[in-house]
Image (cartoon, rainbow, N blue to C red):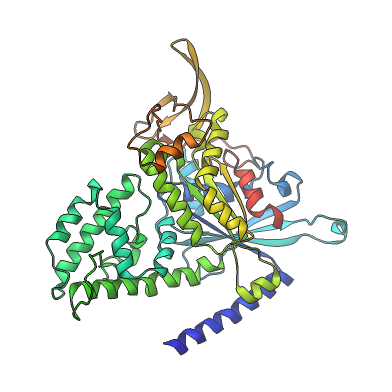
Length: 471
C-alpha cells in the first residue's frame, strides 16, 4: 500500500509538472472552484457568469470586457473526461423560459470549460495577437468541502464532537433514542448499523433545514451512487476504550476510515487540490432570518471551509514544487436583490465580519481574499412605499410559492455587524430588537437585448476579482 501510494503520488506529480509547463508556455488555464452550502445559488451563479461572459453587455466591472479586449467566448469540452459536464444549456433554458424557474441545485461535482480569446495589454500589445485563455469552472457541493476536515480526525474524536453538538438539538431526538437502544460493544448486526445510519442521516437533513452548517459527513446528504453502501452506513458512538473485534463500534470506526480514504481523499486529490481560484457562496440573509445560532454556526463553517484550502501564490516554481495553491478566494453573500441597494453595503460589512478570521488566515498565507454582496440573477425591482408616516425601501418580485407579484420590506440590517455577531457568539436564542425577514422570489421573465447577459448585481466585479488579472 505504501509503495502504491508513493508511485501514485510520483505519477501525479509528473502530470502536474507537465500541465504547469504546458499552461505557462501555451494556453493558460484558470481553474475556478464554485462552492457553497445548500441553497446558496451555485447553479445560478455559474449559469449567469458563463452567460454574461459570452454576452458581455452587462459586465462593465470586468476590465477586459469594458476595454473590448475579449474578442470571443465559446464553450468547449471540459478536460476531465470522467467528470460530468455542467448542464449549462438546460439551466439557462430554465432561467430564460417564458415561465422561468430556478434550476435544480448542485448534487454532485461537475465541470465546464469556457474559452476566451483575449487581446493582450501593455507596450507590446500591438505586436502580439490574441491569446486563448481557458476558464475551467468546477462546481461542487459545499457539504463535500466540509468533509476535508475529517481527514485530520479519528473516529473517536469525530464521534465525541458530533455527539456534543447534537446533545441539545431537538432535531436529534430520534437519533439519541436509537443510540440509547444499542450496545456499541455488541457484535455487529447489519440491520442495527443501517438503522443507526438512517437515523443519523435524518438528523443531518433536519439540522440543515434548521439552519445548521456543521452537517458532516456531506455524502450522507448527497450520496449519489454511494447510497446504501457500507461506506455510508456508520454513525457516531460514545467512546468505548478497548472494543472487541467485529463489534458494532469497531465496524463503525472501520467504515469511517473507509469513508475518508475512499471518498474524501479522492475528491481532494482529483479535484479540490487542482483549484487556483475559489468563490464561496453564502446565503447570509437566510442565516440571519433563522436567528443568532444559525449565524454563529455559519461563521464557524466559513472558518472550517477556509481551513480546507491551501492558500498562497501560484508562482511558476511554487506550482512545480508544491502544487497548486488557491490564489484568490471570494466570499460572496448571495441574494442581494432581496434587499434595497441602500442596504447592500451593510450586507457586505456583515459578510466581511463573518469571514474575518478565515480571510486573515488566507491573507497571511499569501492569498488575496474579498467579501462581497451579489445577486447572480436579479429577480426583483426596487420601490419606495409609505407606511405609517415613513417611507420604506422595498423590493418587488414574483413570489415563489404563489407566482403573484408582491412588494416586500425585509427590515433594516444594522450598520454595525457586531449587533449581529455579538448575540450570535453569546448563544442568544433570538434577536432582541429586530425581526429580519426573508422572502423567496421566483426568477422574473427576461427580455434580453442582443449582446446582454442576464441582469445581475455586482457579478462583473466578482469576475474581475476572480479572473480579471489573468485576462
